Structures are given as C-alpha cells and as structure tokens.
Length: 236
Image (cartoon, rainbow, N blue to C red):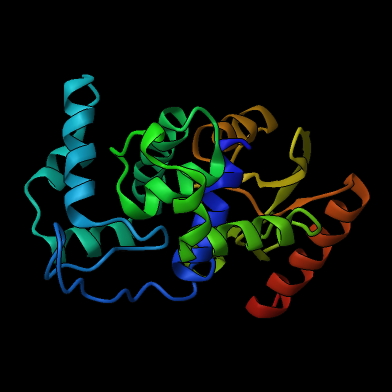
C-alpha cells in the first residue's frame, strides 16, 4: 500500500474524511489533557517532534519556525488554516510508520494510533487482532478496495479564478493514470491556472486530488459532474 492510500484510510478513521475534526481530550498517558488535531488526528507533541525532526534534516522553513513556538491551541488553528502544512506533517508521520513496519499497513496503523516510535517486532498478531483501531482500518481497507477513493481537497476553501467569458472556476481538472487508478487532479493551484506538468508535479508533491477511480471513463464523468456542481453553486 502506498502512502497516499494509507493516509486516506487514516483520515477516514480519524475524522470521517475531514467531516469531524473535534477530538476528545486524553484523560491519561503521555498526551493527558491534550486532544488530537485536524483531519489526521495528530497529537500536539507528535507535531512538535516531527517539526524538530525536520530541523535536524535541514528542512526548517518558515512554517516549521512558527510551529516550533506555538502552544497546542495555536498549533491546532494553524493546521486547520494550512492544509498543505497538515498534509506534509501527516506525510512525514506516515513515512515513518510505514518504514518502521516494513510496509505492513496493519502494523503502521497500530503505530499511528499507539505510538509511531514503537518497534514493529513488538506488535504481534494478538495485539493487531485486539486493536479496535486496526479492526476499523482493516474494515475500511476492504471496503475502499471495492470503491473509488474520495478527493481530499476542501472545495469550499478554494479561491475563484475568473475565466475569459466572465464566469468563475474554483476547480479545473485533468485526469492522469497511476498505479492507484485514474486520478482527477486540479489544474488551479493556489488560485492560479497551471500547466499540466505543474499540476502533476503539485499532485506528486502534495497528494491533493479530486478523486481516484477504477477507470478513466469513470474519472472523466465524475470530473464533469463536479464541474457542473461547482458552476451551480457559484451561479455561473
């Protein structure tokens, strides 16, 4: 399983695909008094740890410098406002648990829930089978293997681009084929219409997409449907 598929499953478990980002406050343990953040259920201390890891790798940019100084409440709001930063952070954690689990996605899901620094050798079948989180992960994995994967972009937050005819677009798409299936990706990035190459590069960098489908025909039909829905929503 590749990282993007893994993260989509985690996102579904943690926030119902971004629909519910209010997480319970932890009553005990390392994270006592804190609650997870965002669509991927990342704990504040985990976020800070991976910010420090980026610093050690020489990847300490402006976003990381801000995050390093933030309290949990500020960090939660920052991630809510910065989808790209949240996805990059989730991607770093996914890379770690998938690498430490040697690609065993069930163990990686267990680590995501119980601690990303756990050794894979300490996670036996009994622990996996008794974990409610892993049970949800397996069930969702089996379900999604029979279906398309929904997009991970919040269209309500996308800036509008004015077209030559005076109409507006929040989403333009192109369809590419990958080992996951036919992927609809946006060709409007950060409020600007970009080239096909730039759109593909953006997808490979961020993993942002508007849906993954079993066939190109299905993807094209869904892209046309999405375009019509957006046109109706904005009245043009």
